[in-house]
Length: 308
Image 1 (cartoon, rainbow, N blue to C red):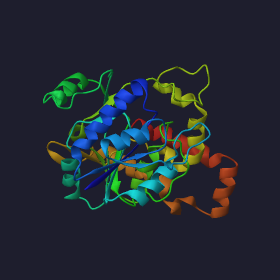
Image 2 (image 1 turned 120 degrees about the horizontal axis):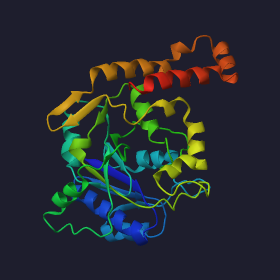
Image 3 (image 1 turned 90 degrees about the vertical axis):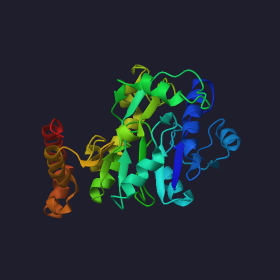
């Protein structure tokens, strides 16, 4: 049914606790799903063997040891046994019914990109999944702590064939999925209510490319060299924010996102995707060299941003 992929930090200390919680929440869907661990960080092979999941150690990283999206996408397309792919961050607990959510969307669309915002809570203990009330307890803890920022992407195999070598988890990288969906006219769906993702809070000591004066919280990503590199590599894709949903999946079913906002987004998107708007190639090339086009794009983006 679904091939679930993820990368992990080293399985030690607090990271071991939250990553085991996340992994074991995904295993509830196996079968018919499969879970595949990517990367060769400390403890990944042992945990994969212990839990009977597939492990692919070969994964390209940058000079700071951060996995590259281009390598992840290559492994996903090569190793997935199922037609539906779910890439989820290694600290995310899935409380909702993943399989039921995907089956519902398949009944409406052939191609799609599903994501969701997450609820963020502190977690210091291993969850006892044998306790029949564990889901209820987590939901009660998480209520009121919704954060924007997708940690899961669900799509058909082949949705993404090739990406720039973006550093995963270092800012902006997730926008490439949004850009790809809009570029190929694929429905982009918010399934926050149905999936109910729980992000287990952690420190950011693993980000090695940030300045020593950067804040030691989640905003540290903005001050990292990897964020700056991602921004350069993203091109026009950096303008496609994760919150640019076209559809919302709730308990009432699939509905078009706010029609006015959706219409404005289509206009905004056409400016950055429609090649016919590039005018004469030599003129476009000249404007890019003079940074005029970049300036105009940023002005348009700032005007639209508050309405999108």
